[in-house]
Amino acid sequence: MYEDRFNAFLRSGDTLQVYEGERLVFSSDKDRLLPLMEYIGQSAVSPRAVVIFDKITGNAAALLSVKAGGRQVFSPMGSQLAVETLDKHDVKHHLTEIVPYIERAGGAGMCPMEKLSLSKGPEDFYQEMKNIINRSETGAAERKERSWKK
Image 1 (cartoon, rainbow, N blue to C red):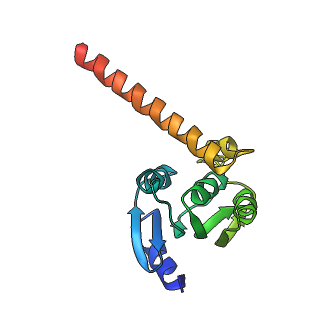
Image 2 (image 1 turned 120 degrees about the vertical axis):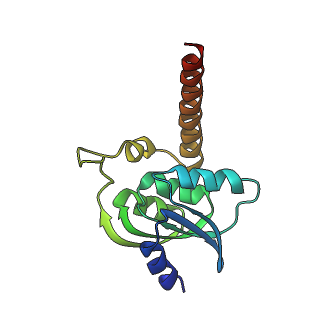
């Protein structure tokens, strides 16, 4: 049912698409975990069972997909850690390639978000990500304010 949509997603410039039944309810071309965080933030009041297309599904994305109400996840690449998380939460997954873990850019070890996600549940990881984003936004605002005062 979703195979044609997944193929169209792969050809698109999007990094994330979320479907509720046949209806596309969210899409983004932003990098990393930001699209999933944005989707969860806007749907937190009434999460629904959704189908998620993601360009890369590591354990961090798998945990956020569970938090987002994902019932199926499609991705051209996923980690074995993500498979274990999705299986644990009864989320069907369609991953074209499965790697042991998502690597850092440049291939020098495990991706920091993959590492951060280890031994966390969906809610714990989501809260950790919110804290990281808030600290980042606060730091950016403080730097901007200091530059205005110069």
